[in-house]
Image 1 (cartoon, chains in turn brown, cyan):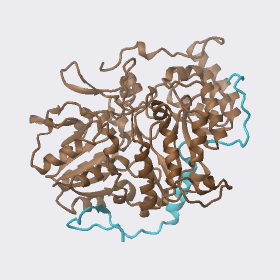
Image 2 (tube, rainbow over the protein chains, first blue to last red; image 1 turned 135 degrees about the horizontal axis):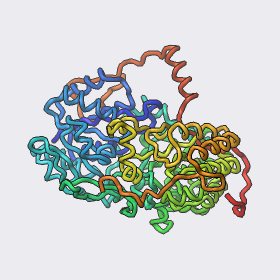
Image 3 (tube, rainbow over the protein chains, first blue to last red; image 1 turned 90 degrees about the vertical axis):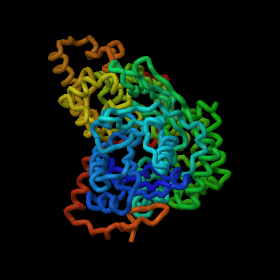
Image 4 (tube, rainbow over the protein chains, first blue to last red; image 1 turned 45 degrees about the horizontal axis):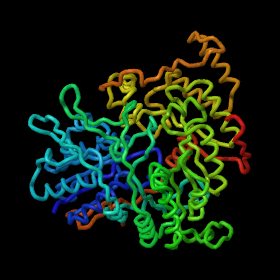
Length: 522
Length: 57
């Protein structure tokens, strides 16, 4: 029996905490199922600072302090592991999640306090670590999917851990170990739809893992079959993700029965009225299942009494209802009008679409499998189904140019889209990161950790990958796009062309296909 | 009083959340002001949008 303290690090500090960390909630449930002693400290929810953290770490003799999170939690994780090592010198510190998986060797170098890193999915690896610790065994290289420190501090990567295919064997997330009433339920609101705005008790569910698409900006960090173990020129094992022409994918999803049973459990136990599906792309799963999966979830949603009451009764939408509204992520090319209508009838209120751009050349190079036409088609299908489409946009693509900016502005105007675009960001684990790594490091004085510390939710520029525009230009152009100021954009294009010696009439671009360039570290 | 630690056993030393301190006017002002600077946004503003796929987009 192992005594484990999970610590959820801070993330998106500019906003209130909104999401129970799903991965930690699942791992805590697995650890309890396996008979271990578990406590959770949700530092992101409480946000109480170092004093509280020290008190928590000193509250017991922990065998394990376990942390995980996405890459943008790195700054908080760095702080927590330093304090943890100080307060609990003999405790084994385990780090997992996307933050470790994206750059395992770098992370273990930057965080000397971490004893074991879990690379990729932790559903099998983490319980094995706990079991071995309980038996007094610390031979980490024998545990698949880990990185640990050998003699002299040399890092040792064990063989890759296989993915869990029977997802329904997972217990339900241990939501009860998080401050739902104190923190999460008061922050339930999601301002993407009227129903989301009225949500007062929201939880999130991850019904599937992976995505079939190869968007250059996206990253899956091992849970989508996208990770490969490769031996570098130095003979050392490392992980590799998407690279130009090298993509691997594994699609996995829970059964509709599991998904709806979990939703019903959340409804009965926590009295929720909204669920956010965290899935990367619900429509990938629907397509992979020959259009059975989503339809079956909707059918069972209704059969189990989870459909919002006014939809069931065919009455007007009011501000109070029984049942659960829900939201998720869709895809322009993979959705169908039929499934969208089914989803609405089961309570779907809004769907996030990564439309990204309305420029044909940008979308063609993105690997998303969408076009301006499919973007627009899905937009109307979704509206017609009674669901709000959330039309996310990005600026600063490698091939972004003045024409692509105008293409997007034109579509926003015609479709009534109000949007402040994200900045194209090369997150570790994405193809863009692999392609532009050298440039990213250069932009941070050769210090990759500085870049990782700066990473946020892509609302700020952390590294420029546009071939045509620098950070100042991108910030200015985004502002002019928001103000619909075509005149000043035209004016600036003339200045830009003159400085780049590109005459009028020629394409306004310096873009060269990066797949023709050598990939750093390849 | 809320427990900072939640789990399946009682830790040796219980750790409770401190009583929430009322927000200062300055703190509230800065929080509200930050919202005006904030992040990304995406929504559809038109009630009625005409759909003509034949048009060049």
